[in-house]
Length: 114
Image (cartoon, rainbow, N blue to C red; front, side, top):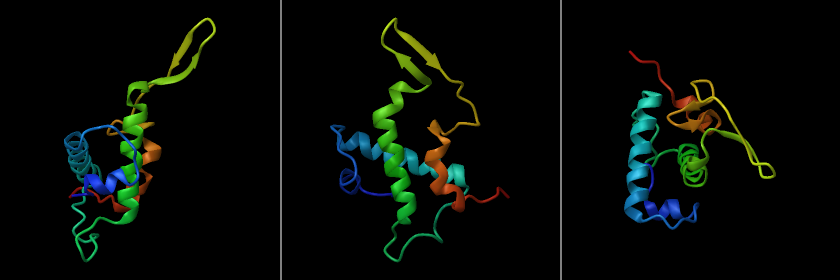
C-alpha cells in the first residue's frame, strides 16, 4: 500500500471517513501502477515503503481531489454579472483526471510497455 490512512492524515486535514480515504489510496495506487507501467518492487525501501517523492505526490493528488474536484474545468469565475469561463480538458493538461503538474513526481518511474 502507498501509505496508511493515519500517515495520510498527518499531511491532510479532512473530514472524510477512513474507509473512503483507504479506497482512494488503493485506487490511486492502481492508477499509478497503470500510468507508470511499474510495480515499484525495485523502488520500495527495505521496510516495503514507497519512495517519499511518490508518497508526497499522492498526498498532493488527494489534496487536490478533496479541494478541487468539484471545480474541474473552470478556468475563471467573476462574481459581478456572474461569468464563468471553462477550459478544455484533454491529454495535454490532465492525466488520470488530475492536472499534469501533479504527476511530475512519477515521471522518473515510468517504464515503456513491452
